[in-house]
Length: 411
Figure 1 (cartoon, one colour):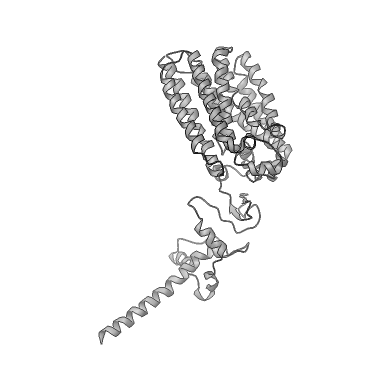
Figure 2: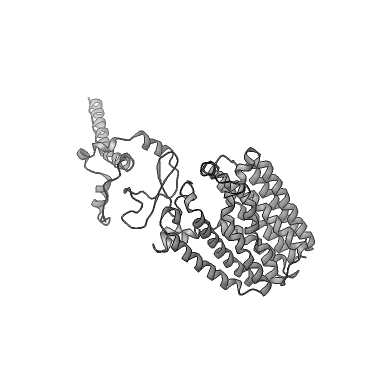
């Protein structure tokens, strides 16, 4: 007699628990169930009240039957969801009600995904954010790639047995940050029509309309003025040498329209600091040491920027611009392997001419392994992997710098 009562009690308890859990599940799924551009927004809830907190978790069940509807698109979103930071907006415009101006990126398959905000969106005032993004302050890899050849040269020019001039290195570090930002501004001004047609670049401040070209030109003038202040602190030989690099900086963005080798032109531009760093310390150039160092940077740039260019090859074909990624095609790995060998050989020649110590060659071997790993393992059909390999070049630069530093100190 007791067993039927126990079973009946068990069924009653299970049914009650289901009725309590259903609204919670429905509330959780309701975030993803709506395909419309608007949704219910809770304005400043008083979370100090425990009943308010519970009321958000357990909505009125009779008014929540629509929460159980989950579309195929949302199920696909759930299965492809990856951990990370996401901003969910219920508005269809570019700027939400908070006025922060977070944008939704429309990708090639016409799905909407939220643009993940950077530290610029979180910490900087709203008026400054477009200018910081124009200078790529949220993407420091470009500054690293521009600064490393400067640091190589300054350290190589230091007195054997002594540390390099850290004040000079700090000066060149600031100069790399400013010149890289100025280069990005020039690039975005000249490429604003192309950037609107390329998926990776269409949300840049000038291409998206957040900044007008006139404001971009004014900001460029401000950047160049700050850069001039740094250049004037160098010797006269270095001032002339540094100013001459502006011709390369201003003309580089146009190269993709005329040649399949814009990456080589970028190499000539980005590694000018290898010449300038030595002259800032010595007051002149030593061709036997500095030229191999400079051309090693050019070959290095051909490796990492060709990998980088594979991210945009489909868009480049549609827009009609050129790159080494399109020039090399399926032979990219063979070409980049050749450039890698030329890069390491030039670095070894420069170190030999400078009579540097043995630690340099040990670190150079490690840097060779890092570069070979990039070329061997990169998946040129995967944009994310191309980006990862490109960003990893900051470690190649660090290894070469460490080799020069220890080679000079212990020579």
